[in-house]
Image (cartoon, rainbow, N blue to C red; front, side):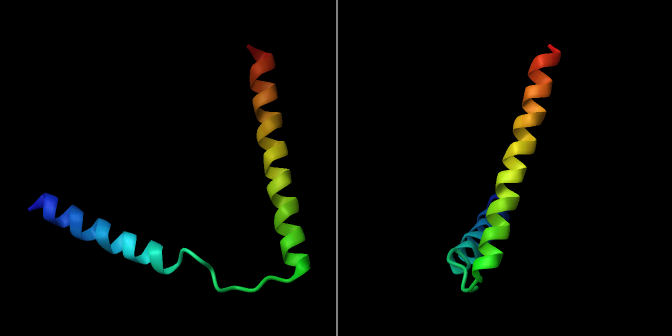
Length: 57
C-alpha cells in the first residue's frame, strides 16, 4: 500500500519535472546580468562564511 502510494507520487513528480525542464521564459539582458550578479554575490557570501569558519578553528 505504502509502496504503491510512493511510486505513484514519484511518477507524478517526474512527469511535472519533465514538463518544466526547459523554461519558456524570455529574459532581457538586464535580467540575465542581475541574476549573474546575484549568483556571484551568493558565491562570495558562502566563500566568506567558509573562510570565517575555517579561521576560527
